Length: 150
Image (cartoon, rainbow, N blue to C red; front, side, top):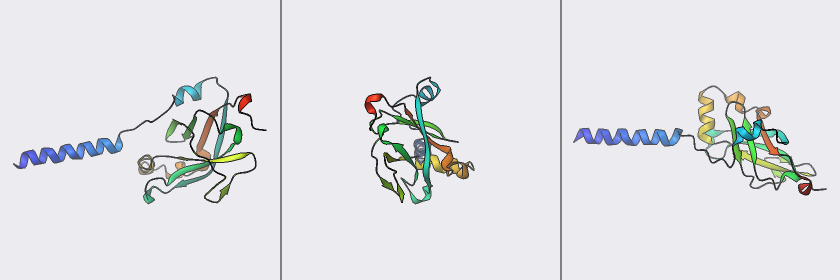
C-alpha cells in the first residue's frame, strides 16, 4: 500500500513542478523575428519599474509613456534584459499609474512580467537587472499616417 501512495505523491509533485516552471508563451507574434526584421519600429524605455513578486500576482511591471498614435497598434514587444522578449496585444491605458502622470499627447501603458518568472530571475541573482528601468523596453511597429493623432 505504501508503494502506490509514494508513486502517486511523486507524480503529483512532478506535475506541480512542471506546471510551475513550464514556460507558457501566450505570444501574439514572433517577437524575435519582429525585433530582427527591417520593419520600422518605435521603442520606449520604462518610466517606472516595480519588482515586488513577494506581494503576489501583478506586482512586477513596468510603466511606459507612449505617444497617443500608438494606442491602436496591433501588438508590441516587451523586452527585459535577462528575461528576453515577449509579444503582447495592448490592453488598457491610463493617464496615471502609481503617481506617474502622462505628458500631453501621451498615455501610460503598464505591462507585467510573470511573478514566477521574476522570482526565477531573482533566484539567479538578477534582481538589480530586472529592477532597472533602463532594461525594460516596449517596441512597437512604426505607426502609419492614418494612426497619427494631431
